[in-house]
Length: 598
Image (cartoon, rainbow, N blue to C red; front, top):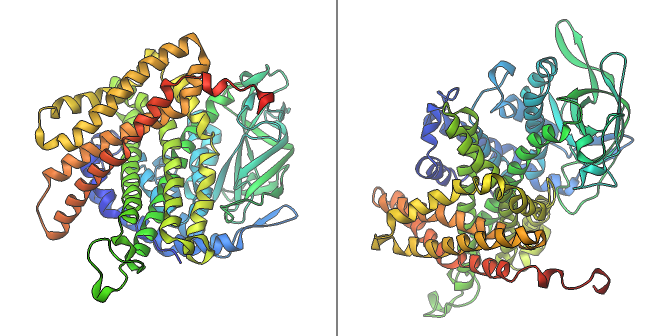
């Protein structure tokens, strides 16, 4: 059996000392988001995750979802857990007060996501998709749709989905065939098949709101001809002034997938047959509206990698402390007995790798999330633009780098457990199976890398990249002459120098041949991810050094934080050199073998 306790001490450290969450109450509309309020909310989130969601994680995986003639039944306890989740207000954390929401910062929701995902990744898929649907409707639908659907998504009585993929198209949405024809009453009739639809059908809420990409009769070819539609499972009806589910719409779940992991999350094939639909946004502008939802989802998927990694690390650490095996290389155990495996250098290497990756990934995620709030609410347009640039740049990095991290840490947890990690009883192998999908959906990690190199870097002649490069450069300049900071600053300076040189060289090569940028994309995303986390770790190390002292617990926390920073910068950041070298190798070796010769 696995265990999980929300790492609230580390979360508070990152929020308060690293990313500066204390500035949130200065943003319009977030005046009540004080540290005390945030602490209280996160304590309740920890309780919800630890006592309600986490106990269902292994049983939900073992039982899975059941499909029967269009009906999907989730595992025992899931509908009741969702009722508690919605009643606790967790579906409305960032929703606007006018739609029944709490209006809390997006940063707070990121932290809640991590905590809930650590407890039960499969469960969180349902409210996670609803959050994305809420944002897409809020930003692109007309007022009538907002007034009808947003309160229901906010209070959790209705859930949402994102219906993009079809049998013939995954990432290439220009191949979509679903059609929507206008009806006489101002609605549309939508037909088509969508696959891999998370929570497309389930028994946890009274209605499901599908956001569906489809083509109008006059649609131009490709992605320019895609529109976004809202298709409810049940058509809304009013009764005594209240909105409730009315007649069944023309949408049916035709089956669910049998998957490697996430067995408790239904992945559905959805058949739309002359379903009543409402246009969201302008005709043929569906991709712009859907990207609102997809960008939220990509950041949320990054949190899935982080959340699973935290649980994997906690359980590997607990096992390493308890499992006696082998003798120390220097000296002997008591009476020559075996020592806990945490005493062995290679196990310590794995644990330190896990710890440094998780805590560094947390800093990256929260740092990005803070800028989401600044981009939305800061009164200064220049500050909003700068924050939006950083979020745009880091979204593919958060999604891809943190899900790679989640897979690596979960795999290391199996290695620490040895044979016991490979069997189901410990629950560790489930973490590996569950987190594997995070590197695939919402745009594969390869697509995230192509987005970073092909779209984000060239935008504004490198304008987005400056939001990361300038803070790192300023930090290095500030501490360049401080010998006490050398163990942190020197490795970062070397890696940052490589990143700068590679960026210039890759950009020049890609201008001459776009294949050069595509071939380098994966390594460049990893390089940028490592260096950015290295920057955050160097900052955390200096903060921890400055806060040395206090109680025994505080002193131990900050001393450990400093040592973990040094480990990341000395043992993990050097991986950036390998990525830089691979990029320098160019595209020739990647493209040299003809397809027929493989």
